[in-house]
Each structure stands twice: as structure tokens, then as C-alpha cells.
Amino acid sequence: MDQNHSQHVIGLILPSVSNDYCGRLADQLSEQFASHGYRLSISVTGRSIGMERELLHLYADTADGILVVSEAAEYGELESAVPENVPAVFLNRKPAGCPHTSIIESNQLAVFQCILANAASGNDRIALVCANRHLSLSREIIESYKNAMRSTPSGFHEEWIFDTENMAVNPEEFVNQIVNAGCNTIFACTQTLTRQFLDYLLFYNPHAASPVALIGFVNKGTPSKTQLAFDSIHQPLQELTDLAVQQMLYRIQSPAAPVREYLLKASYSSQKVDVVNLTEKNEQGNESL
Image 1 (cartoon, one colour):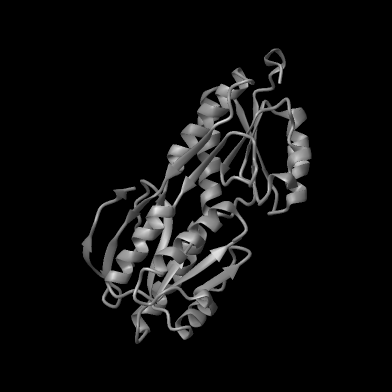
Image 2: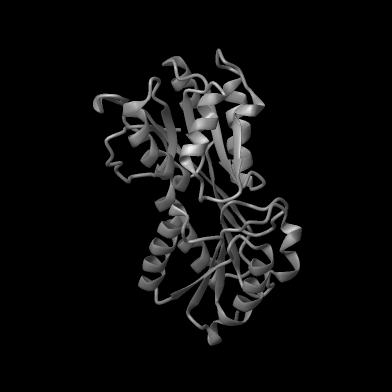
């Protein structure tokens, strides 16, 4: 977009704002862009690729730049809708074949480490609850989970992967299925799923003959205030936000700048607790990977 006709608007396309991660992302981006004189226009697709395409067309005429948390698995699903004269930066996930600057996170090592650590402490029958498994981030988590489980005494079992296409799960139903499958640990692969299972396990574990352990996702640097401590993978949301603002402003000023891919690594934190008496035993600080 011609800087002489700048509208001082950045478009942000999100699949949902009910997602814990996306809600925090929108808040932080809005605050940072405001400090640079830009207004953030936030639009939600409801996880519809068709709506994502419509919003890309809309922002081509109304924004100086577009940030996208895409639901597309392949760039071809969006290609004809992505404007050529407005910089686009893809966040958190990258559709296969995407030729634009992307800022994504890698959970590979953190997933591998947390699964092996839990297996070593006896929580080796680990069920993965996965949302939107076609997305690049989900595919990475699943592959890391499979590889790590193959290194545990229990091994990998395909039937221990439980799918949900949205974030509104019934934790009681999932926990019953997971326990009946012989698992003693739940690995929730998003922040929203983590919160939902955590809320339910606080009720379930004190009355269960065999309490269920939890592995989940949280934002890096955000303290977890809960009676039930759990092993967690810390997502680098602040680093992603800072880099997204930096790259978008740079690309607005320098449209011909080279396309780049930035990979931000998550970190693993182990926190053990007596899940029956809810008294903390020990805690290991974040270990950056």
C-alpha cells in the first residue's frame, strides 16, 4: 500500500476469540500497534476458510497490513484471496506452501521432554486430546507425541489419540473414555483444552480411585494459580507478539523486503503435586529448549 495513502489500520484475522491463546494475542497486538499509531481491526472467521478469504479481500482495500492466524492446511486454499499490494504475515501456524513471512512456534522438543519425564515418574499411559489435527501446529504435536511415546514402556497406541474439532469439549465424557482406554495421564494440546480439563480434574481427582495427571499448554511467563499443579508447555506468546509487530511495521515500510520464517521454541515446566491431598511436593523451573 502506498505510504502516502496509509490508513494506519492493521487487519488481524483470527479463527476464534474464545480460544485462550487468540484472545491474549489480540489484546497484546492491539496495545503494541496503538503505541505505533496503528489501529488493530480484529475479525473472526469462525474457523471458516470461506470467511477467511472474504476478510483477506476486505483488508486488501482497508488495511496497511494483514496478520493471519489461518485455519488453512494448504496455501492454495487462500492463494487467490491474498492481496499482492498489502503485506501479509502468518502467525502461530503456516499453511503448507505459504510464500509469506511467518512466525510460528515449535513444540517438538518440549513435547518430547514432557512425555518422557512423565513416563519416568509412572505416568506413562498418556492420552493426547487434539483439536484441528490438520493444522501445522497440531500435526507437529501429534508427530512429536508419537515419537516420544514409542520411547516409553507403554509404547504408542493410535487409540490413545482423541480428536475434537472444536474447543467446546465435555471433559467428563473425555475423561471417562480416556480412563476406560487404560490411560492415567491427559495431554491437552491447546490452552483452552488445558483449562477445561484442569477445571474438571480439580473435581474428579479427589474422589477417584486412580487420579489422572495432566499435561497442558500455558502462556510463557504467566503464573499458574491453581490447586492442581500440572506439567506444562509454555508458549512464547510475548515473543511472537513482539516479532509480529516488528515484522509488520518493517514490511509496510519495505514492501520488497525478503520473506522470512521465524521459529520460536516453547519451553517445558514440571510441577508435581499430591493430587489427592492437593499439597505441593516439588517444582522445577522453566527449562528453555
